[in-house]
Structures are given as structure tokens and as C-alpha cells.
Image 1 (cartoon, rainbow, N blue to C red):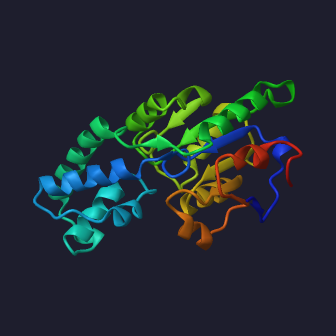
Image 2: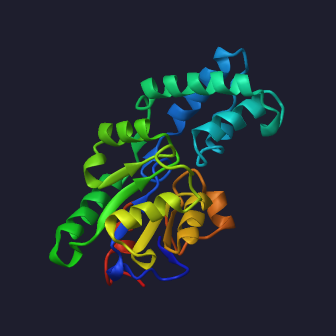
Image 3: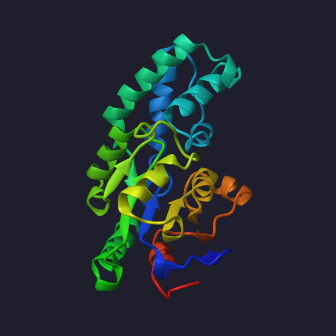
Length: 244
């Protein structure tokens, strides 16, 4: 079901920017396994998967820091810096090796990307580009997109370490606009959490929220312009004259 809070002018869109975790892919199990492997390496008890999944969205460093805080019954500010550095390094190494153990593209993602790409190839959509902007480190982000057959649909795949700051700072989204020649009103950010909505707002662009990801509760706190329940609805929501 598509819910429209502020109609997106699909006909004028030139740049579609997708979040990765919780939007294109369900990576929760591999992230949870990697965090718990790091906690176990340093003698800490594992955390429940839902708790770890709730920390996803603001980048891998904060994911690990929040997990360490919960596992040690402390605050993020109280986490020992030496422990964090070692645990984070272990997490990254483990995740690089296990990033595709259980991760998969959500139902409808490949078909929707194919349809949107075909629209881009059509004469009336020739100026439209697609990209990924995630807070996940760029190396595993690109590796996952390549492994799941997503990479070829995107002009760029940028991660949380591709720019000096992460979402919701608009720097990465604005950089993509500059690279593609798209104005804010010609750009939409597609994501599953308020981080993506805030990124779009901060850049002056449109936002499309996905309820099937990790951040449904945060989307309720900060609603996007359009909300969809499945990736298959992206095509309808972002096709000229379809809605709005």
C-alpha cells in the first residue's frame, strides 16, 4: 500500500538514491552475528538479535559502540576506547568474511530496480540516475551489492566512510546531486528509517520510506513524503504520472 503525505513529482526526478540495509537488503542476521562474534571475542555475553538490529542505521562504529554499551550495562560515553577500537576492528574483519552468509535482497527489489532502470533507458527518462548512499562502510557495501546482483543498476555506491560525515548530514546526498547534475527538487532518497528522511530534508530533496526495513518505528516519528510497504511499489511511486 502506498501512502502519500506530500506528492513526489515523479516526472521531474533525475536522481534516485537508495539506502542499503533495511531498504535494498535484509542484512540483520549477518550484522547481529558479527556483533556477537566481536562481543564473544572479548569475553562479553551475546545480545538478542532484535536489540542489535535496532542499532542499525547510523553506521558501523555506532552500531558496535552501542552494542558494547548494552553488553557492559553502561552508556555509549562510558565505553572504553581501547576496547571499542579492538572490538570494532574484529567486527569489521568478521563482517567482511561473513557479510553474505544470510544477507539477501528483499522481495521485489531486483524487479523494481530493473523496471526503474528500463525507465531510465527510455527516451523520456534518459536523465534519471540511481545510486546507493549507506552508512555501512563502503567496501562491504559494494561487495554485497556485487554479490547479490544489485551493483550494475547504480552509477555510484557510497558508504559511511566515503565522505567526512555520515547521514543524516546531507553532504553525501548533495555530492551525488553535484556529480549527476540533479537539483534537490529532482532527487529522492529512499530508505527505511528517519535517518534517510532527515538526510533528504537536510538536502532539500524528496523522501520515500519503506516499512519493511529495520526503522519502521523511527519512520512514524519522522514521516517521509511517501510511504510504501514493499519494494515492488517503488516502480508505481516513482514512475511519472503514476501517483501524485
